[in-house]
Length: 135
Image 1 (cartoon, rainbow, N blue to C red):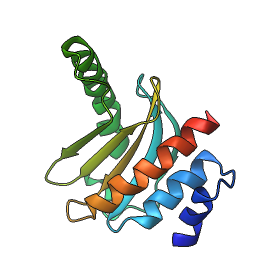
Image 2: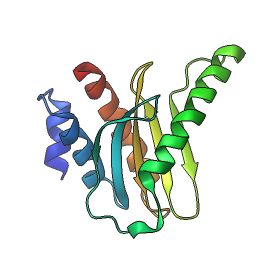
Image 3: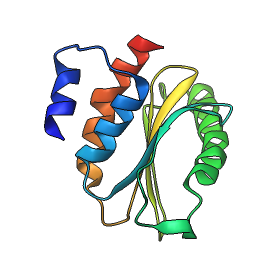
Image 4: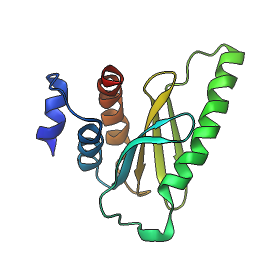
């Protein structure tokens, strides 16, 4: 688990799926991770057998969140507050962390509400530049 993430730090080339898998396996309570475009289309997703079952449509939620994220980006631009870097959406059944990779893509991590949000934020912060370099 940690050894997979350690490879990212030393610049070892990894596939998109390997980055996403390392993030999910590195965060307690994580259920899925995707690299997505602002059009809502996932480039790659890693989702092991989910502990939240079929009660939550993770991908469907993320497609909808991509639209909200686009609005947040536009609002930040209008208000001149700087680029949106990260967004957290906490709901009763799913905590979602979103980190922008570049102007076209973002990485999104879904966790159980009791998951380790701090570690999720940390691993997304590490993965984003690596994914950006591979795009």
